[in-house]
Length: 351
Image 1 (spheres, rainbow, N blue to C red):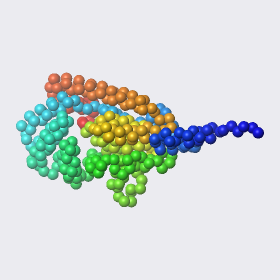
Image 2 (image 1 turned 180 degrees about the vertical axis):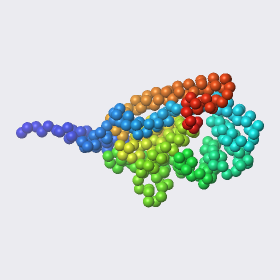
Image 3 (image 1 turned 135 degrees about the vertical axis):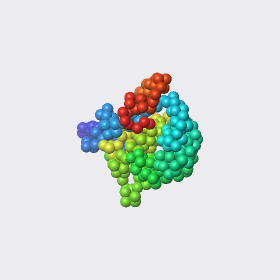
Image 4 (image 1 turned 60 degrees about the vertical axis):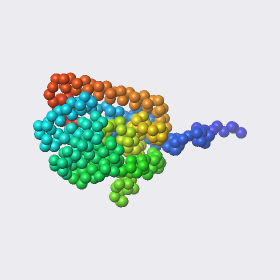
């Protein structure tokens, strides 16, 4: 009798049975089995085309995760505080100037002063959307989340669609943190073929939809939520770990042809590097591992770490160039903000 030669598949299944107890991620295990389906091979492999496809679907995400976009220097905000205070001495009823002053105070880390500036503006003319929106943001940084929600709700009552509807996502972000982030599902749950159920902030956003729309995360809802979080990263702090994690949760959600788990892994890794406690760092690294192992040939941690480091360095170089320009413009005199806008943004809104 001829000795039966084990098939490649049987060898592989034997290997899986032998090694399963060493594997920590259920996502990796499911992905290893899916590879045997010829129709699913491309969904389970990692290569440079996969990353290129993710970047094409979300063209600005990598730059916002790593801070590779024009941002004002600390010296600019010091300059603007001085300029706006002089402007208010001349015309104390110039309401937009209060916003400029408060935002620069906030960017310099003086959140209490920023809140006081908004109180002065409110005393001159109450009920303005920008006043409440700014106060809601500033109070987040003072740690007073309940009062922050009060002002965000006031802002929403005046203009629910401001900033492309971003305000409500900021509200839900604050509520998510108050609820004990992460809320609902801590880790993504695979429903087969890399269809990942919403989890963390993504699940929280879905829970805020009408009852009839809570079964699935639709593409328009997910896109709107991603756009909102990216806006917060651009205009607040791109390296805020809460925003990075929320973005990662949204990017992971969905099937492989629409999600972006590699970009999510970068967001989780960056968030872990900014974590306030060892426990928070460990929790974020677990999410990083899940996102990293989505593909059979997932990138090694050190490869992603190097990619993140190089991208962050690129962002730092851009910001250094902006600072060099702004120092020169401050020395030369004139409107530094206008010069920044002309060179770096055209007519775009300045963060």
